[in-house]
Image 1 (cartoon, rainbow, N blue to C red):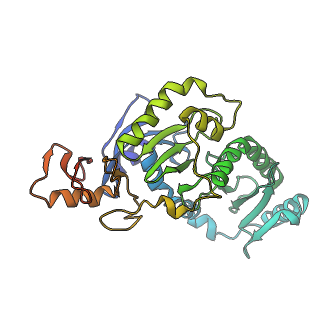
Image 2 (cartoon, rainbow, N blue to C red):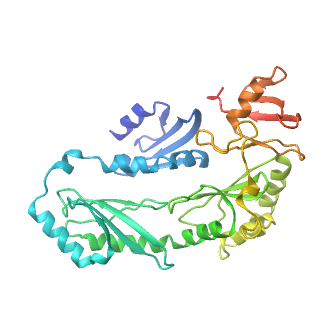
Image 3 (spheres, helix red, strand yellow):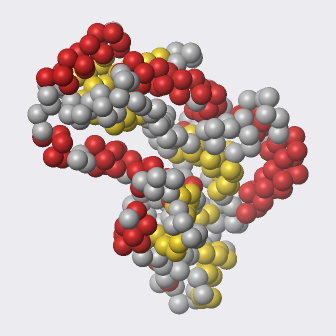
Length: 353
C-alpha cells in the first residue's frame, strides 16, 4: 500500500528490492532534479520512512518542515473531533500531576495537546509537543520534537507521560555531543546558512574567506567523525582546500572537537567573529544583487583570481543565454563573466534546460 502511494505521488521512483522497502529515483523541487532514495521500515509505514538525498535537497526540504508537522498533526481528523471518554481525562490529569506541573509549558483547552519542557546536561532547553487522541493511554500520543533524528517512542497500554518524558530525556543525552559540536560552530565561526538554525539542523555553511565557504553535513549519531564537506567558491581557492582535505584526512581524530579537527585538516583558521562582521563575507549575486532567490543562494563563482564574483545559478544561466557569444554543450554553458569578462563555465541540471 505504501509503495503504491509512493509511486502514485512520485512516478519517477523505481523499486529496488522484491520486498518493496527501497525506492530510488528523482524528484523535482524548485525547478531542479534531485536524486533521492526512500527506505521504508519493516512495518511499511510512510510516516517512519527514511529519506537519503543530497544536502542541497535537504536544505530545500527543511523550509517545509513545519508545514509537514502540521499536516501530520491533522491526520485522523475524525478521532480529534470525537469526545474522549471520562477515563481519558482522569488518566491525563493523573499523569500530569505525577510528572509535575512545573514541566508543563502549554495545555490546550480540550486537553488534547500538551507541551513539555526539559533541560539537557549542558543546560540547553528543549520542548516536546504531544498530540493525544481519545484512546489515550491505550494508544500513544504523536510526539513532535526538534531533533535531527527520528524520535520513536516505546509504548504499551500501561505507559504514561512519565515514560515519554524519560525517553525524551534519554534522547537528549544521546544527542548532546552533536549539539555541542554545532553550538561551537555557531559561536566561533560565521555561519552563512542556515540563518537561524534549529536543533534539528545538521547542515552549516561556514565562511572561510570572501566568497569562499564550506558546507558541512554532520552526522548526528556520529558527530565526532569527519562530516560531509562541500566547498563553494572559485576553483583557484577551492581546489587547494580539497587537496588538503584529501591529503590530511588521516589526521582526523574522533577524540578532538569537530571544529578543531577541521582547522588542522584544512590547515586554516576560520574568520573570527570578534574581528570581522558577517557582512564582510557578503555573497550577494552579482546579477540580481540579492542573496536569496527562490530559496537558493549564490553558488556559482567566477574563477578569475581578481574577480571571484558569486552568482545565482539561474541568474547566470539567463545572462549567458542572452549573449550571442555564449555556447552550450549538453548541460554545460560556456561564456564570459558579467563582471570581468573572463571565461566562465556553468553546469546546469537537465531539468533547468
